[in-house]
Length: 83
Image 1 (cartoon, rainbow, N blue to C red):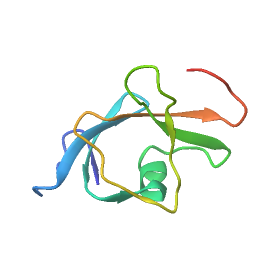
Image 2 (image 1 turned 120 degrees about the horizontal axis):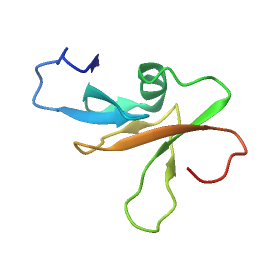
Image 3 (image 1 turned 90 degrees about the vertical axis):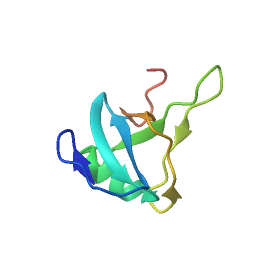
Image 4 (image 1 turned 30 degrees about the vertical axis):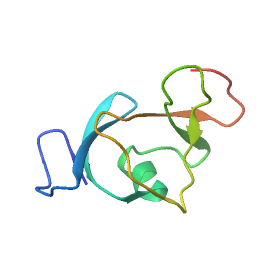
């Protein structure tokens, strides 16, 4: 996992955004790795933006994810509604 100009050369690496910062990440990736990469505070929740009117997906640190290029993630303190 790398940030901006540092890119892992892997056919399964895709660019994603965490709090608008660009990262290139090898897939699949764990929720814990995404939290670490984005330096998400322990008391915040990490979400994957879902296009349209659907609810954004809460990222589980114990689950593997295969994200699409350009996926947008963001964090919010627990109990915060809306972004």
